[in-house]
Length: 153
Image 1 (cartoon, rainbow, N blue to C red):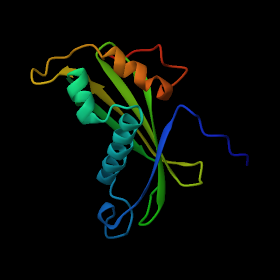
Image 2 (image 1 turned 180 degrees about the vertical axis):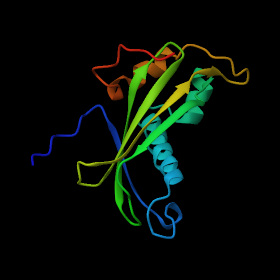
Image 3 (image 1 turned 30 degrees about the horizontal axis):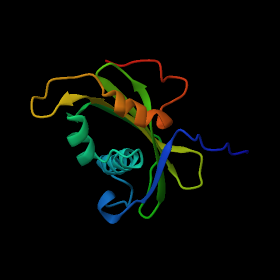
């Protein structure tokens, strides 16, 4: 089987399944995936020059999660080296969707996939605001080419 080249617009991290991520059967506990998604998301924002502390201060927004959805397709196990891809699936007026794909390193099969909807809110007041143009501009290289013009609210 030919393996296709990875899409350049997907940001990737590698992280190993650790002892604290697994249950007694040494299979990853479903809640542990949140840690993998958080690391990928944090590193994506750092890679575009907006680590969260800086983004909060410079853009005066927070990005709380309004929705999280995950499908588990295979069981990852203790010490598996996982590749987590994250990219912007959609940008709406006041929110954006981050899509995640988890694979074992070197295996094209998806172990899990997920998406989060993040809502832009003004710091302190917590009222929704438009997604800052600077944030959209910085995330553009990691935005799905075919859906970058579709929106979420």
